[in-house]
Structures are given as structure tokens and as C-alpha cells.
Length: 486
Image 1 (spheres, rainbow, N blue to C red):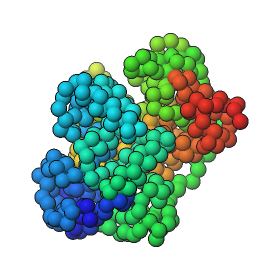
Image 2 (tube, rainbow, N blue to C red):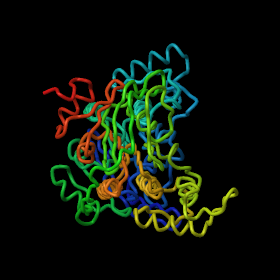
Image 3 (cartoon, helix red, strand yellow):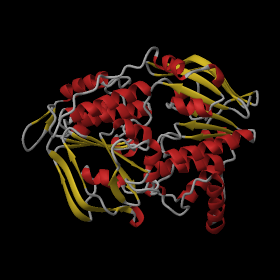
Image 4 (cartoon, rainbow, N blue to C red):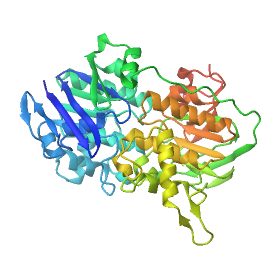
């Protein structure tokens, strides 16, 4: 075995993250690791990558026990990790971050050529000179993948690598993964997407509440069996909310133009969204959808055109750790900051005062209602798993009781049950009269969620015809056919 973890246990205070977990990654194998949010998947990968020491248990590489003191130690043994959140140095360029991860010399001309050759070989294009701080979430994720591969890893640990990738990008990534394993490498893949695990994995392990509840070859498992193992029963889906008919226009834009990074952005958008509608947006990264959502949310000023949006507006950003939450602050503090002065726990005129006791109580209620698993309301947001951070963001946004709700990839990193719950809450917000605008890079999610679908292609927003299927929608986002194309 290239990598073997045996009897791994890990606790954080009163929270038992892992209980006597075994996991092995063989050469030529993709080993998928599934589980609910907070099941211990990322913690297990962080131990394998040297970022965390286990409380008990052993890690072995090529059958020999090792003790990693850092991620650099793990890289020296051929372990590379693609993190769920960006680890790039924001002030460094793409090529400088790659050089830092791989230990390459920083000779600008030679380094640029080396990075260009690498990204071309991997079919993951990325401008070497771009500062990491200017990259979108999906491009930051692409940089993480390239960094791991540049270090010539023999074992890749992929933590939700497709969470913010478009379908075509995901397919290209997994073609590379297959080439990597065929060349003798091994891959541990964390994913919440059952179809992804079933399509690419050779072996699948399921964690629940920090313990292994299933570990089998791919040929011996089914989607239904994996779902039961992950959540301990059947998927609970909220009953559909009763839609509001003919609500007032809450979002209207005409000839909207919004500048983006590097001169790109939104060139033309005209649309209306009524109260009671859930409008989903589909598009490949960099085609104007980000600018549209952020203009509607009030975070970006349009360059040209008309934009009218009812207030209040709530926004769920796709980058939860840099735009959504302050990791070093408590859950309560993050909720107070996000809900703002209209909250029931804020009193007084002029000088505002926060009733922290009431804020903590309400945060606890939200955490219970949205199943945010933590060590209490005074735990830091950074101590939560990615999925639990996402649930906290959605809970906080809905606490504002918005007339307009804007969300970027709101189910990113969520497990099956949590995704179903978020979908239900988005539909319920619309049924209660809000105008809901959602972007997802998952075309299936777009088609499931949207009462109507808007397509972003080349900076232009158009509306997809009713009843469009996945193939035609995919063609539209790639600019290969207009809404009337057959």
C-alpha cells in the first residue's frame, strides 16, 4: 500500500472527530471517502497530510510507519493534498505559489515557462502572472490542484476538488486522476457526490460520526446503500412549499453592465425577478454570473444600465472563509455581524447595544434548526467543518428575513441531507414572498432548483427556454447555441 492509516483517533476538546479509523490507498486506485458534514473526512486527510497529529493510531507510507511533523514532511514522502479552501499566499502570483509548494527556484522567465508547460499538460489553464488574491474561488481551487501535482506527489488527497468546478472541468480533472492512477499513483477522494464516487472510485469508505461504517470495493455498493450508510437511514426531503403566484417585481435590471477583474465581467443583462420566484443561474466561471449576483446583492456598482432591488437583501457568498465568516470569531459574533442592526438583540438609537445573551440564545436556536454541529455558540467559526460553516451562512442569511436572497453555490460542500434541507429552505423563502437568485456550477442542481433558468455566456445573460434539458443547457453555457437552438 502506498498510504495506510490504522486505528486513527482524534479529538478536539469534547468533540470526538475520529474513532479508530482505518484507511488504505493502493497504487493504481481511487479510494473515495464519503460522509455527512462533520463526519471526520477532512480531519482524516489532514492527519494523512501532516497538518494534524493523531491522538492514537499510525500512518505508514510504503508499509513503513512514519511520523509527520508538518505538511512538508508529508510532501517529502510523496503525499500531496488539494485542500477544500485555498492555501495560496494572496500577495504571490500563481507561479510564485506553485514554486513555493513544489520547491522550485523563482527565476521568473524559466518559472513561467515551467508553469505554463505544467498547466497545459494538466489541461488546467491558469495565467502564471495573476496574483492569487484576484482569483475566483474556482480558480483558487484549480491552483490548489496544480500545486499538489507540481510537487510530484505519488498519493493525492483530494478534499472536495470539484465543489466549485464546472461539469466539463470536473470531467477533465477526473481524466487526469485516471491517468495519474494508471501511472502508479494513488488517490484518496473526499466527495459528497454519490454519482462522482460511483463513477471514478475503485473502493469506497463511508464515515459517520467519526467512525467507519462501510468500506467496500465499488462493485459491491449501490447509491441507495451508500446513502443509508452516510446518514443512518433514508433521505428526508421537506415537502414542497406552496409557491406565491404573481408576486411583485423585486429585482429589475435593464441593459446592466458590470466590470469585472481584468476588464471581464457582465456586458449585458436584462431580467426581472418577482417575489415568489426562485431563479437559478448557470454558467462557466468568468462569464458574468458573479458580477450579476454581486450587483443584485449590492456589493458591486453597475457601470451602466438600470438596476432596482427591493430591500432588505441577504447574500450567501461562495467563499465562506474569506467573504462569509471571520474564522477567528465565535459563531455568535459571526451571526451578530451578519444579521446587522435590524436584529432583535440590537437595541438603542444612535449608540447601538448588543444583548449578547439574546444573541447567543438565537444563535443556538439557529444552529439547532439548521443542524450546525459545533462545540457550542462560543466555538470559533474556523473550528467548524466546511459544510457546517456553509449551513451557518445560510441560516444567518435567512435570519435577515430578506425580500431578496442571493446565493452563490449555497450547497457547496454539503452532504445529501443538508443539500436537501437547503433546497427546501430556498424554496420556502420564495414561497414566503422573497425573490431568490441562485448560482450553482452544478447543472443538475440548476435544473432542480430553478423556476426559471438564466444562462451566463460571454458576459451576456439570457433566459433558457422552459423545460430545457442538461445537454442543451450545457451547450448554452458554452455559447454553442442560443435559447432557440435545437
